[in-house]
Figure 1 (cartoon, rainbow, N blue to C red):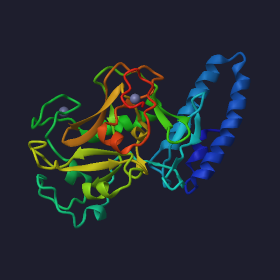
Figure 2 (figure 1 turned 135 degrees about the vertical axis):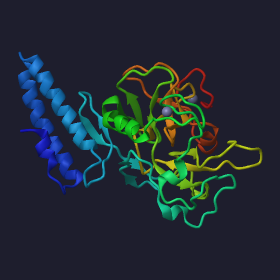
Figure 3 (figure 1 turned 30 degrees about the vertical axis):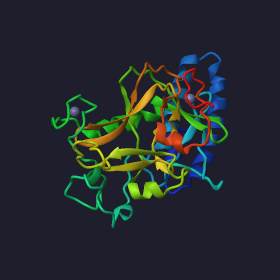
Figure 4 (figure 1 turned 90 degrees about the vertical axis):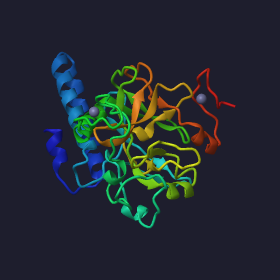
Length: 314
Ligand SMILES: [Zn+2]
Ligand SMILES: [Zn+2]
């Protein structure tokens, strides 16, 4: 029996797949544990192969169903489905999407921000907002307006294929703590961990949202805004909102002494909100960023980062 064939049949709900996974997991684990006595190499190989297959299938975005997020259990298998709560207490499963999502309806009838420089308005595609040669290329290091051959799609595809083996999601505590993102690989300072994705929302929508609706939002400049922020002029930005749909970076926790930061840059001609390591990250480390003053102005909670340099613990 191969887990691959088990999971290939289409048209099943995530519940079906999850219960099949559970059964498979029970059975294979029992079998594997039997084999473990005496045949360690074989066991390790089967275990690794099974694990890899299950996780790939589970996170495949090429199927009819939406891909959801799962925690990783103690032996590296998918554990529980990630469940979040709205401010009104209703539960939902956030959806995994590696690409930015733009709903043209959100942008229709909006006036472009004064310093938005781009021909196409209102935007219909993500490219209409985020295509630019401004900023430094985070792949090759070429500066603003120095065209390079870096390919955004290739860069992104490489990260997409491996994220589930590079990071894992763990449950850390009841809301408002929730889930955290841990690294399974080492990273050096300045290394790029990936790009934050979600729904691209205009400023007008963002500003009308409740703190809860906006709690997963991150701003990113749009068009070619030169210079970035002239005094008295609002920078042309939109918001990447990962509350309902986004990638694994929606699980980044805050720390007042973070090991990573958000960094606006480009890969080839695509502007990205990248996550960059600030320090050496070791396997097993929780990935953290500083959410910034805006977030904490809205947040009524105290910080739980536990750092001696914590600025918001009282
Ligand atoms: Zn480049
Ligand atoms: Zn803190």
